Length: 239
Image 1 (cartoon, helix red, strand yellow):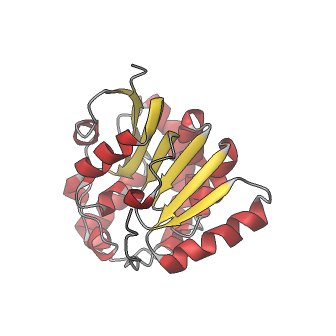
Image 2 (image 1 turned 45 degrees about the horizontal axis):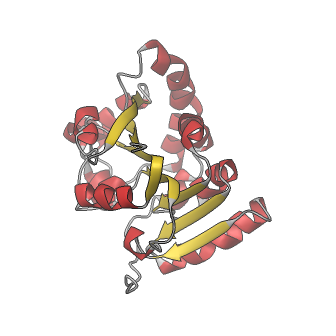
Image 3 (image 1 turned 60 degrees about the horizontal axis):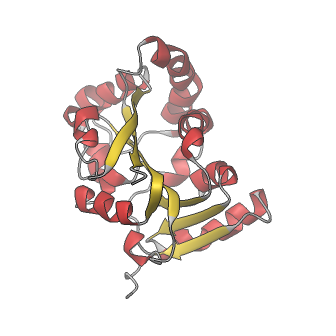
């Protein structure tokens, strides 16, 4: 298989969002029940999510097309979790060995960066074992597509129905949730009023320390029907 040329990530938000520790913990709690065995993480970035989620698996394959970012993942994870069974692939999912049969494939704030999202998930389906999970978290509501989305290379935002509609054949949906109901207010304000291409550190801290904390309490009361992010988990048939 020919290697995909390294692609430099155009966004500048990765370092900024490492400060959103409560959001990262909230997402981890949502996806942790579906992580086991061999997990492929697509678009691992700097490895911040990898560091938090990889201990829930026996083997973690981190896939990142930006060579500089990919090169930093092993050092970050090695310091936090020495002895973890980690493999870093510089490239895309197309560069992952077909001999790897995963129990789960994870896209956290990644699928919106991929132009052919349907084709991407169809390929991911071929790498999953029977019963394997396909986990996708993405920004919600195309009406909120903003200068921020454009600046960091988003092709789109998703509705819950729209994301469920990408389910590959032979799968069922086992979780579909909207997350961060309070943060939806911040996204709406940016789209309609602020029109910023990048949030400030102060705004990230306010969102993470206040809004995310409130959302973790409010989201289940609302039945996970309202939020600025959409989480969907598909499971492959055992047949």
